[in-house]
Length: 109
Image (tube, rainbow, N blue to C red; front, side, top):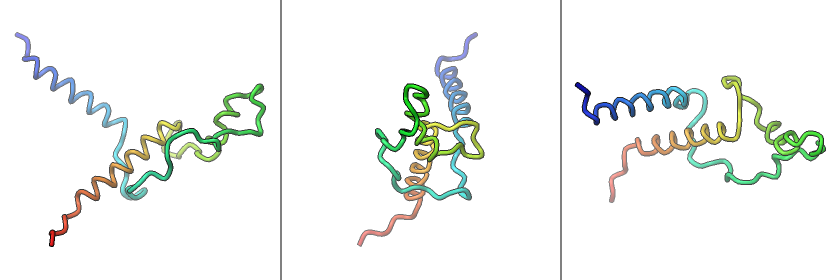
């Protein structure tokens, strides 16, 4: 006899969440503080270019060299990219939102 569809769906969802949760750890409160706003606006960053490199010789270094120089790989990561940095910034921002919501509300006067 097969389990009900809802049970299978719930188990699949919980397995997916546990795998996703393991890949994206929660921020460590001792490492840094929650963010209340983003320190930048995502978009095209002309400083990401490394204009000292000839694009015909090394286009990757030309197009990403400035960003790589300003964003070294953190000690606890095996690689680093704009997407990993954005995910970390999103976690810190959500941490700040949840911290703000956890404070007791002031009584309205």
